[in-house]
Every structure is written in structure tokens, then in C-alpha cells.
Image (cartoon, rainbow, N blue to C red; front, side, top):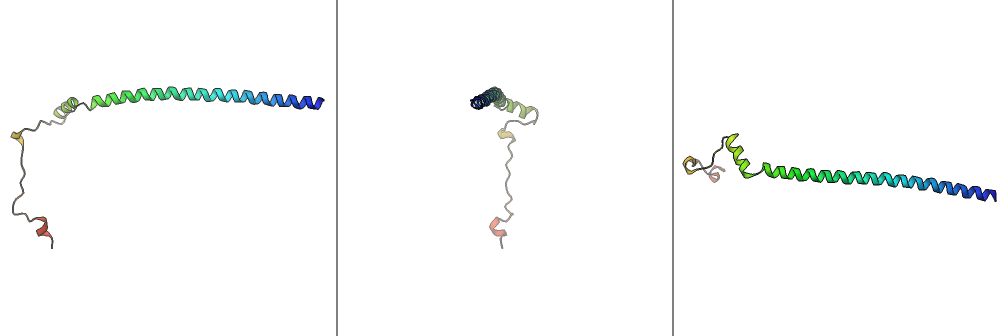
Length: 98
């Protein structure tokens, strides 16, 4: 009878240790999951902020302003358009082939 009681006591102790270990793992995994969710929310907010900044940087008025200030570009007008013509003495592609 004492052996049976000792075996049952050992089984209860093993079961109790396993239960404590399982609860600890569960809490640890839940904390990691919660940390992952908070980091995902942080990344989503940062992504939205970067998208807004990208839209601001690519606004046509800002691009026009940078083109005129930094690159000294100016709008196209017919007065400054230059047309390039080929001289008629150049052989065509078919004439150059042997």
C-alpha cells in the first residue's frame, strides 16, 4: 500500500511540475506575442508616416520648385525649342550594309 501511495505521490508531483512549466511557457509565449503585436502596430504607424512623407516629397509643386532652383530648369516654350535635322548626305542604314 505504501508503494502505491508513493507512486501516486510521484505522479502527482510530476503532474504538478509539468503544469507549472506549461503555465510558465504559456505566459512567456503570450508576452512575446503581445510584444510582437505592439511592434507591428509601431511599424504600421511608421509606415503610414513614411507614405505621407513620400507623398509630400513627390508633390508636383515641390518637384517643380526643386527643378527650377537646384537644377536651373525652365518650362519649355516654343521660343527656345531647337530642332535637329539630319544632313541629307548621310547614308541610310540600308545603304551601309554590304
